[in-house]
Image (cartoon, rainbow, N blue to C red):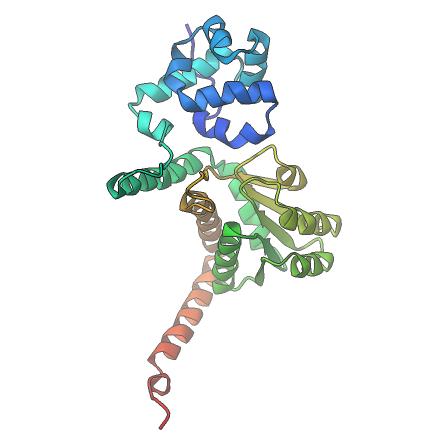
Length: 299
């Protein structure tokens, strides 16, 4: 009788999607079949799946282990459990097509965002999150690196940290990021964001900050990426991009969920100072909005 492996990934499909780029070509063929039809894989014996994927049984076992399972039986069990939860649409959200009516566009996009949040929350390790919270809360300075869509999330994180009194700066320009990273100290924290974990403009400053002694944090979809290898702490997001949605909200919203969890964790840990800083910044902004001189027009 198969029993759940408590150390195995909570969401096998999200795990497969995250590590897909780092797998070997043979393992990628297996992974794509899992993504395309998890129910079929759950129903297949290893011999049947070997025939369907065109790979050897040994390769299937190695791939299952690479995904965090003890073997193919445990992978099948996890996929069967996911299918039994009546979540086929969550497992296969369906990519947008050029002829999709707007009603389908709304449904598919909304489902993708909901899935990204649920998958990220399911695999967000509280112990690792706590370590990041502790590091950032005690930092002298926080650098946040991110370009493109991840750059928007980096700016959001820096803004949130500034609101509670932590010196934080977001860098979307590699030259500025490298300049700041070169001046980092061991009491500083460098947070790097990249869905693929292979963005050159993000990897370069992380390497420099790490060499300078700063604590490094990665927020990425791929826990086997170069960025993950460079980081002291890795937090895994689960949003994915498609042909019609590069820089998709699903990718950003999964990163934003992690940023919000870090922010709330720090605010809880430093409640008195954070609460005072939030009130002070809120009053300053509200006072600026209420200033009648801002509403007067020059004559």
